[in-house]
Image (tube, rainbow, N blue to C red; front, side, top):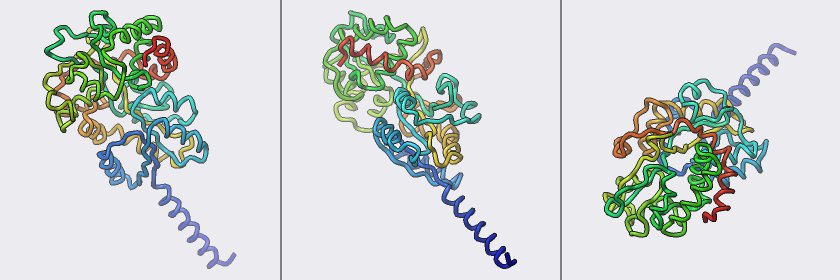
Amino acid sequence: MTPRFAARLAAATSLIAIAGTAMAAEVNVYSSRHYDSDDALYDKFTEETGITVNRIEGKADELIARLEAEGNNSPADVFITVDAGRMARAEETGILQPYASDTINGAVPEYLRHPDDLWFGVSQRARIIFYDKERVENPPQTYEALADPAYEGQICIRSSSNVYNQSLLASIIEADGAEAAKEWAAGVVGNLARAPQGGDTDQLRGLVSGECDIAVANHYYFLRAYQEDVEGLSSDIDSIGWVWPNQDGRGTHVNLTAAAMAAAAPNPEEAKALLEFLVSDFAQAHFANQNNEYPAVEGVPANEVTERLGEFKADSTTPTAAFSANAKEAQAIFNEVDWQ
């Protein structure tokens, strides 16, 4: 080999390495979050790291099916969903791998993480009880009280196919046992003001319309009606009160926006960098400010809009991983008690 050829070969090898590095400076995200405001989050990450974020949005179940179908050829590096229960489905299909990060585990409390580091919470979503202030003098103070016959014909809540409700029931299974959870679900069905229908905002609208006196919904749907004009809700928002359930016991049920590394991630280092960025002060403040969610990292404050709901004790004794572990049993109970 001549010296000139050797030099050219070395230069070509160097260029290939540089090109490979440049090509690897990206991370592919499959996300069921549908907020345009997240663009600012990913732009900040790119600004700090030089790593480009390619995002594909869709419904969680569709993205899980896509990841499963793509198998080892999937381009996905990171999977983000808005409910820990759906992470259970991702676990079952084998499309996740451990993220192995001391940064994440040091920032996010244990109860908001998968025990085997398959996923972790990046923000918290409280599922609370709302009521009409004029029509309800003694609103239920616990989830269990929603099954009290005293509230017959008063409750609006979403269908059993809704993953927020599945996770709530899964948490009750973990806290009270399967038999008690079944009695609770049957009691709530007996107290329904109408057949389950619509989303969380529709349950709150039911309070305004008078169809129901008590509703169950995630906290940020209520707060959204303060920030923007939500038809059928904002004009009468001050007529609605709220209860932080189970404050004298285990605390209020919180669900998660959760993030994970895809099993076939072609860019694992970049994926890890993004996952760790999601627990940074900037990202945590972003989740708090843009959708009125509660940060997953302790010490990061909620925003002013969220603070109007006051302080509360979250359920830190029931691991969010239980939502996944008990998901099938929860659905079976729903079916058995005919919760539509």
